Each structure stands twice: as structure tokens, then as C-alpha cells.
Image (cartoon, rainbow, N blue to C red; front, side, top):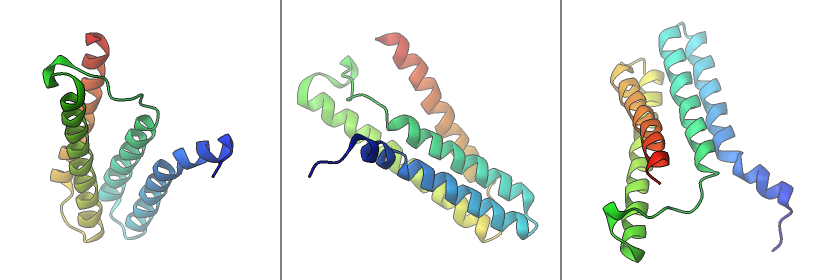
Amino acid sequence: MWIAPEGRRMKRWLVPGLTAGVGLGVATALLLDGRSRSAWTALAVLLGYALLLAIRRHEPALSLSEAFGSGHRARSHLRAAAMTGDVLTMGVVAGLVVQALRDGTVGPYAWLAALAGATYAFSLLVAGRAQ
């Protein structure tokens, strides 16, 4: 089935847009409940996650690195590492949202999310120079 280019572009932004919308919804609910610190933390983490998802939409195919060897084995290792990072980041973001909505402590999750974001940004800078 052929899809118009406009439709494909719109699908690329669906998940990042939905994540940002959830962030706004969670922040609004927390602000209405009087928990402004948790609201701003949850909003910042979810908007950061939406930004990560938006950036990843435009990534080219996985580049090969000598650290993983070459060929099929290298692609398998790179995909496994990327998937592990994605699942762990999603788990941290989900944990933060659940804790915020339960009126729990969001600090540890916020620090883990900040660490994940800083690590990703740093690795982009280092990987960009290495090639």
C-alpha cells in the first residue's frame, strides 16, 4: 500500500507528539493537585524523552564501529545495545510518571532520567567526532 509522503512525515511525529502531550497532561494534573515540583519535574522528563524520540526518528542506519567487530555481529550488538538503552529509559520515565501520580518521591527517577539524557548527548558528541 502506497502512503503519501505527507502521511509518512506525520507518522514520524506521532509518538514524540503523544509523549509531549502526556507530559503536559501529567503536569497539568499534578499542578491542579498542588504538587508543582513533581509537575515540573515530570514535564521536563517527558519533554526530554519526546525530544529523544524525535531526534531518533531522523537517525541514519546504524554505523559500524570497531568496538563491536564488523558485519552482522556488529549490527546485532549495536541493535541490542540501543534496544537495551531504549527499554531502560522508557522504564525510568514510566516509573517517574507513576511515582508522581502516586504522590511519591520522584527524585531518584529524575536523576536517572537526567543521567540517561546526559549520557546520550555526550555519546552523540563523541561518536560524531570519532567518524
